[in-house]
Length: 414
Ligand SMILES: Nc1ncnc2c1ncn2[C@@H]1O[C@H](COP(=O)(O)OP(=O)(O)OP(=O)(O)O)[C@@H](O)[C@H]1O
Ligand SMILES: [Mg+2]
Image (cartoon, rainbow, N blue to C red; front, side, top):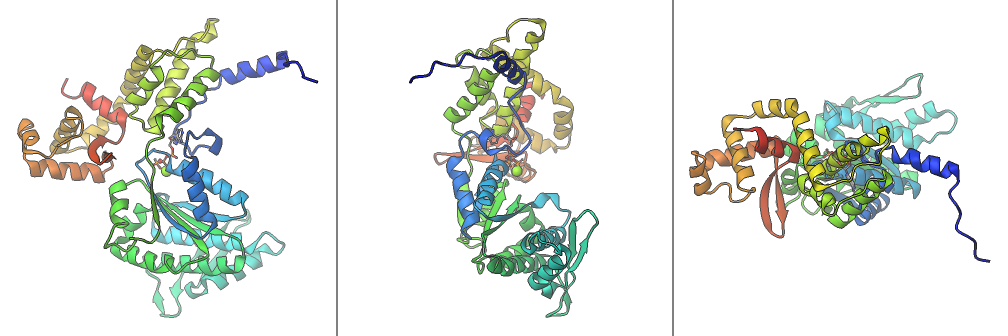
């Protein structure tokens, strides 16, 4: 028998009203899998790498969603039985600290959680990292740390990078015995190579290429550096697959945005969502930031009894101006930290749409030389202020943070 559509109860209405007051747009944290727009294929590929002992370099500009993709893949891999050891390399003061954390986590995870865990952790750490004379500390709260000492086979105090590759060798030994998939994820991997130098690349490659029981995901946001380090002639060449994380396709992002405004019962004018994506230059973080501010602005009138304001293009533009202005203290100090040639280079970039910037015509226009512009852009690139953006074989330079670009265009020299 066909059932009649259910009438909403007062409880349903209350819960819908409550949902409508919670801003669905979030920025600055790794998203949960169900919050991600698109990214289905790349999440599956990263999970597959983790589950099948493969190696993958995940390369994408800052704030494009690398960590969120890794997080979603990690959850999938864990639910399929994997043990995932994931680190943000930039969060560790030294590579030695990273190596020690990885060793402690691997020993703890591989020891299992049976009774007598402390003894098992010490035993597992000794089996995996014995060569490195691990000294294990288990605190009353159960947290484990390991100090790595000498390489007793050589009697030489372990040096930084060999230490990390030796720990990875230990993880491989442990994974072989464990009988379930193990993955190591090093996010912001370029930090390891920048700090450890060419020696780091060679040592890590030497270790990782022999490993069959551990999947590796190396993620990084300094795209040029990551591309260079995985190119022909460098140790990481052909060590694993390379995947580039580009912008989220607009149709998917628009769907996510539309659903969010819908939840807030906010009417959306044609073209307003595109305006958000244009002003945010399709950077997912900035899209969410701007959408969040717009959502709050549209809903601000609701508390005094009216319906939410419509999301119009004009409202988006005004909110964007306000958000840029609100970040003035931060952008001012970022601007002041730049050298005069770097400031000139940024203005030239914005006024020339990021194209043909090191031509003599541009140099003449800004009363400088091509080589000065070139080195200013190199410095800005390595400081993460600008990035290369390649679409269909054409490379343009962009200001990494679109809000900073907007601030410069609006306030500098005016
Ligand atoms: N697929 C997506 N759909 C919607 N929003 C996204 C998506 N991916 C990322 N974002 C937005 O971008 C923000 C940053 O994501 P995330 O931290 O994963 O990026 P990241 O590339 O690791 O950044 P960073 O380079 O700073 O480490 C998220 O908090 C979210 O607001
Ligand atoms: Mg990240």
